[in-house]
Length: 427
Figure: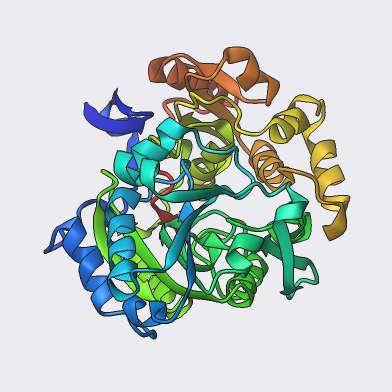
């Protein structure tokens, strides 16, 4: 028997499969990469040797205000390691600089106080000045230009008005932006709903270059890069993490050059070859990335890249926070016909994009080709409302998958396992 450990919320699922049924296990090499230095040392070294930029201490001189864009609670960015070093270097060079931490919620809900403490540590969460971005608050936004796609580029005015704008984040495969990190802290991180909706339009989501691991020719990436430059994002500190959410590499400096070096490092580790199978098991990497169904679509797309047409995806994702987006949930719940729902989304122009449409579009794309079974803590009714099948246990999910495929004339179907679906680029 093949025994495999899957991340699931803040715990794990232990599954066992007959050896003869396992077609392959797709794992990012980042999970086995051994850094020669500690997490703190890696970040410190990156800040001391910025890529394509002066040191942060030099940039801080003569500035009155600084805004640090920081990822929100849905991202496993180790801010408790990165943020203290950013604050220390800024204040060592300019003790009087006024610093604000702008939490890049994008279109997500605001973090709670407990989530801020968990992310930054009590000292920073209680003593530093935080601004929580709310994309729907038009009064908080200001225009800084026009996106290449033609959309209005509106960002949080706290960032636009800062003398120095920097960001922290992490780099991982992203299912339509190609890779996370860098420019993404601005769009969608601190952008207006108007800008996010234009960038996440059905035309772009449908573009074959808007896929995991692709930056060149990706219209979503091109918009995001423009937004970062228009916002005058002067410096970034991005990290690459392993399955334990530990830093294995850090990249600091220019928002484009440092990001690309980080992307190159991550892509060399994350790339895996597909192992086609009728059943593919995936996860969203555990907490915090598997808090809801909305985020879990990412891990499903890794399975999409290696699942045979008409096959079954078993998605193991805790989803303790439920659906993660009411518009996303309602779109699926109110759709009796999957193809018709997709046609409606595709027919919308860029200026007609609705909230969470992109997530609905990708999930509908998957449902048109595969059966998706959720092993989850989300309520059964909620899961079924979204045209997904529900399973309390992995064993239950596998039995359902076998039954579905048996009725299609497939017996003892092979299984490919992706223990961390958000960490790999299946190509």
